[in-house]
Image 1 (cartoon, rainbow, N blue to C red):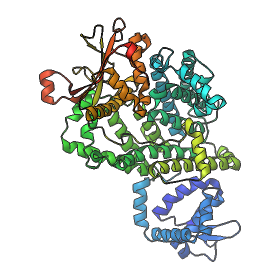
Image 2 (image 1 turned 180 degrees about the vertical axis):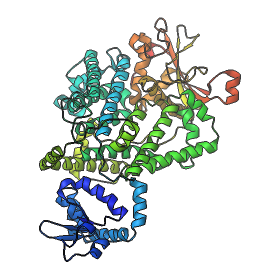
Image 3 (image 1 turned 180 degrees about the horizontal axis):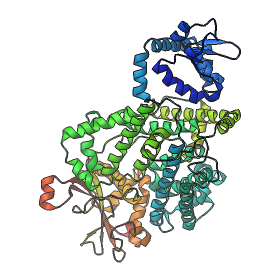
Image 4 (image 1 turned 45 degrees about the vertical axis):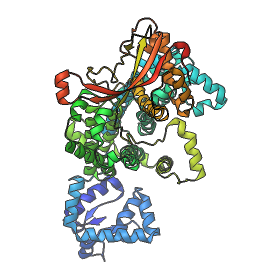
Amino acid sequence: MIYDGDCRFCTLWIQRWKSLTRDKVKYIPYKNAGSKFHPLTSEDFEKSLHYITTKKEVFSGASAVFKSLADASVYQFLFWLYNRMSIFKNCTEIGYRFIANNRRISSFMTYIFWGKNLEKPTYHLSRWIFLKLIAIVYFIAFLSFWIQAEGLVGQNGILPANDFFQSVAHQLGSSAFFNVPSLQLFLPGYSGLGLICGMGLVFSLTLFIGMMPRISLVFLWILYLSVVAAGQRFLSFQWDILLLECGFLSIFFSPGVWFYRLKTPVPSSGGMLFLLRWLLFRLMFFSGITKLASGDSTWWDLTALSYHYETQPLATWTAWYAHQLPMWVQRISTGAMFGIELVAPFFIFGPRRLRYAAFGSISLFMVLIASTGNYTYFNLLTIVLCVLLLDDGIIKRIVPFRVFKYQRKYFLKSANIRWKKSVIIAFVSLVFLLSASNTAMRYYPNFSPYVSIQKLLNTIRPFHIINNYGLFSVMTVRRPELIIETSDDGNEWKEIDFKWKAGDISKKPKFVQPHQPRLDWQMWFSALFYERVAEYFKKTYGRDPISQEEHFSLMRQVPISKRYRWFYLFLNQIFENEKEVLSLLKNDKIGPAPKYLRVWLYDYHFTSITERSESGNWWKRDNQRLILPKFSKEEIWIP
């Protein structure tokens, strides 16, 4: 490769080419070439880059770039496209000529987007940090669920997992695992679920210390897949499936060694790095798209955040302060959010400094969300994915790591395994095609991929390998809250207090993340559902239900009520005074089993600065509606 050694732009990019082609291509400044390449002259070399093969073939311009890469077994498809697609050939040659004639500007733009060093970036440190952090996320997820699993899905819990899997096995028979994949099908009883969670913690630790990283990730994915199936409605959140998809891709991104240390010389897969970045892109970009596609006016007029802090599932005390900010600040914040969700994701696939900008903006966005809300391990997991936007060069500037220098022979040996390369390319292409098709079907209902793609997506859907994402597509502008009361005589009533959700108006909203109190979360969704039920009842009858018979009669007419079967089972367990279920509440010792229950629906609001200074209350509530009038255990109806 003969290049202009006096051109700063050429010198920078030759650094990049050397790191790509290694010792398969020799690079010579044209002033050192002399007359060895006659009849080519110095004037020819000044005008264009030239590549001369061992067969004395001469290529110049864009063809020289693509041919040199192809001979080094790097990006061979580019040279294939150049030879077979005239539009690609013409466009690349025009682009090359434009850059060659404007080298000063091109050099400046190179510095802006790439910096001073254009060598191919490595991701050894990034992967090492990524695997440590994904181990921490898995540990949090397993531990958070395990400490509340007995009350949620234990034998005496709200939705007993053992009963669920027995029903699945009875209905589906031998195909049960492929429709509801869980090891608990083979480990019945709560003890089986405890074993699964315990093993999850163990393999999280083995992954963290670097022991059998790939094997550990395989077990972690299978174990958490089992937990998600066992959790039923309580593990139906986007971060649960995000962890599964991220964990699945991490299996192939991790090194296949027995003990992974920082100095272990195992090259990372560029294809798997792309898929993990593609996952981050889909998570962020389509979180923005889904808001706009919903047509919700609060997103379009940039007022959504003026409601968000108050109406989010588990508000924090910092959210109270954020809610007091003036409307112009809320509008600017909403606009900045759209900028991060709709623009920054494209930087993920851009030059080095654009990737750094994507890392900074998305990570800062996640920190701000975490500072004003309780979103479990979601924000941490997103930041973990952002780590892969950083290469070893920038990490070494921030953290004083001693990086092990790869041995060239190892790389050459790995590069020669063509079948392995082909398998990775095929796998990456398949996952990309499936995820793109899955996303297209969500936003374009009339889009119909090939039947084989549709069948494959339906087959793998229960395993959550490929998912769609998009949080808060419609902003909730009101905050309904369900308030459950108990009584022994039907006259004096006592309100049940939950650990984290809004109830007592004087209770300070607290931070609970990265733990997720899943009952409290589901109560937020239930309140939104029963608000619609209350509106329907008011519209139909002009009043609240006056008896439990009216409530249950209405619910029998609503098919979606089966999704909230857990709520009636929860009420029944309160009648039973089940300690496992009551342990999920703040006042878990509510005395003897109550004789009566009733359920109210209120609208909750943050107090203003003046109201809080006068009353000391963080909340105020109004619009009281009776959802479920007084009823006893004998009168309860389970959908």
